Length: 354
Image (cartoon, rainbow, N blue to C red; front, side, top):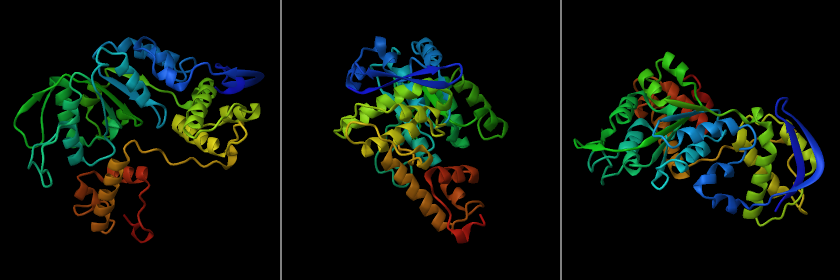
């Protein structure tokens, strides 16, 4: 259990006031996760705050097979909403399969989505079942859909419209029944105007849009997130933290949290490590530097990072042009630059000319 000062939030003004009353969690985190699907949404942190209207939309769309497009800044909890849609749907007994469209080059992403036959390309020593096949009669979560290469988008559009596809190197058509939930932190409408995203695919994905507000617009949820993360990390670190000072919670609520929930989670984890004697003792916010974003799939991320670095080195760190790294990877130069920035890959100083 965690004891902490109650934080009362004026949702209209976004201001926080504190009382000295102690609040104790009356449910463990494990207990929340063991609830039945009838009360699944009650286990989502923030349900009583800024997420209420959004979760009402989730409850409405979940029982259908409609495609859902979740938008919002990085770290706002798009995957949590995708999982809620799956868990409240008739497909909950089947697979929820996730693909990060920003984490791999076009050729690898096509194989990952649709599978490939043995010998379809160099290195394909075995056949591979794609994520669409694995998600048959279940849900496929396409994260970072705005980073899907333009040349692969027609094949995705086809499987959304006709529910069929061919694996790479195969002439056999496979039919699937998959509910697609997509997510992005990018402005797809602007990408359509810029010719970087297919308009027909955008409208096919945007059947039921769900927009997640940033944490700075959900200050009512921050104390609940803090309590949740403290219990989560204290348990995993075998610590007891039973007090959150009033001034600490006040400062946390006032902070803008540009990295949203993920940044707050990293911050609380660091603070729990530093806390002793049962008191939550965070790093001073003015000195705090956000920790790097967590990688959903470290092995895959490392592999893509190595491929990008190898291509850049072979191209002598020239990104554009017919012999540049982007062409070697089958990417647009702007897409490669975005991926490098996202992964923290910087060009050497003597190659900054391109």
